[in-house]
Length: 207
Image 1: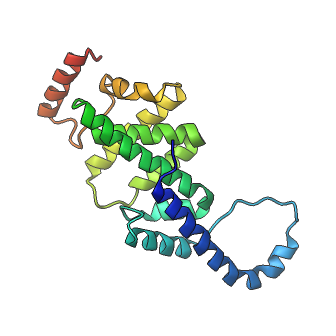
Image 2 (image 1 turned 90 degrees about the horizontal axis):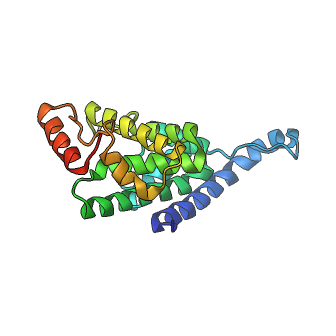
């Protein structure tokens, strides 16, 4: 997986922004720092307000295509060193889902994107942190309906399971099309959509 231009942009902005913030806090934090053991390892963090400002600047610059939720800001402030990698995975999932869906009309781009995203995050960080990331993306996002969020949660869970079972990435599209747990539309339980899904699965020999 190649590193995306957006991830490079984000990394550059983060490093410069964080360094500027660090200069402002070094004087006040000097005495506290001296009291810590030189060998003590602490996870890198960033101030919530600083992270929100950085996210806003990146969105204005077109690096982020959607405003981060408050839950995402808090998560990335806690784990800023993982933000660029997560952004790269997110971009890869979006691009790949679009390509797969354009090649196979039976594949839902949205469902595949969520499944692939959770799958890759789980392989990279494990199921617990992957769930933190994908859940943070949904929590507090008022731009989508509750039905859509429930669909996202369901498909994210499927992606995580596929990763834990060791499935290969090139198997995902076929598996999701045969998996009755995968939700392809926000109103997936609508009778007409169920009928269309049954016809599609019938053509592909799904369970």
